[in-house]
Each structure stands twice: as C-alpha cells, then as structure tokens.
Image (cartoon, rainbow, N blue to C red; front, top):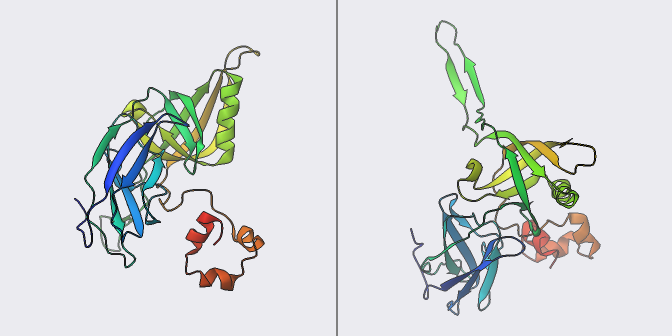
Length: 269
C-alpha cells in the first residue's frame, strides 16, 4: 500500500540491471520535491515482501539519487518505489512502482556489506531444513496434561554443501568464508528451495574428492537462517577506536547530533 503523502509531489523511479560484481539493480530517483531532505527506496518481491534497499533508508539526499541493490532476489519480479521526507520528517506521496526481473543461472554468495566480494558457487547438496522452536513443557501439580511455553518457530537451519572444481574457485570461496560468518546467498528463484537468504555459516569442513592431484573439494557447513542486517548499515562498521583515532572526542561526536550508527557508517563527521 502506498505511503500517504504530506508534501510535494511523488518522485520518479527508474531501474537498470547490473551485471557486476554480481547481478544487481541500479535505482535512480529523480523529480524530487525541492523540500526533500531524506529518501527511502523500497523493494517488493515474493521473497521479502517490502523492504528498504540497503544504503537508501532515510538517507540524506540533495538532487537526483542513485543506489545499487546487490541483495535483489534473482528470477522473480521486483518492484521499486521511493518516498522522500522533508526536514520535519513528513513524507511525500510514494512514487509509482517500477518493475524489473534479474535473470541468472548461477548461485551467488557474498558478504552482504561488501558487494565486491560476490562469487558464484555450485551447490552440491541441501538436505532437509529443520525448523526449531524454543519451548518448555510443564505439567502443573494436580494436572494430567502439560502446558507449553513457546516462542516463534525458527525460519530454519540445516547443512549446506558447496562444491569447487578449481583451486581458484576454492580460494575465492575460502576468502569469503574467512571474511564473514554472515553470508548472503542468492540462488535463482525456487532453486534448491533457497532464493535470496542470509545464512550464518558455522563450522566449515573441506573434503578432497578424487585422486591427490584432483582440485575438486566439498565444502560443508551447518547453516542457520539469519535476520537481514538493518538497511541503514551500508558498509562495514568503524569501531569507536577508529573514530577516536581521527581526533573526535565523545563531546564532539555528541554535538554532531548523529547516532553512533550514522557516525560509524560514514567513518566520522
């Protein structure tokens, strides 16, 4: 449902398919009201319903705005729209939706905060998904039936096998897995019952396949489905020590009237 407006006219959204470093969508927003101070770009798909595009969630704007979406699911229709806000936080009308579908026959993995880390992988096996639930069963005194206290059933966990056939592919995969335990995997829609998911890779094992000189490897890991990192994080976070090393005292940082997340995201003032 479009967000009702409070000022000006809705912006205009156009999209362009990107091929590198992985399939992605470049979203350009124009014709914004002169009072627009921040912008949020939305993506709607069968996989994720409506989510804010990373790097375009309540982001400062001045004139035409462009953001690249390298989390976009593959092989399904995507609809992009945008809303601008004035300095008082009042939204404009939401733009009309613009559709695009990314076509890819490959499965991609990457560090979700570093799109250039994306590589293609081959899925060897994806067994049944386990959907855990945290629950306690207790039988009150005097009762022959139990009561249950339970949380939300988990999206799932399981074991994922990836296969590499060359040393270059193996080293690329090792590099991504060493870089971060939180992996974005994007498989063509409905392939392996995956789609676009954020997975936590736990212990990773490698197994040689074939003779000693054969480079093929099986890489197996227990995986857990993870919540999508908040869209405001558009890059690796800087630590407080890094900010302090730039000469910023806590007083200076506080006076900037920005959250720590905003400061860390931009690396300072």
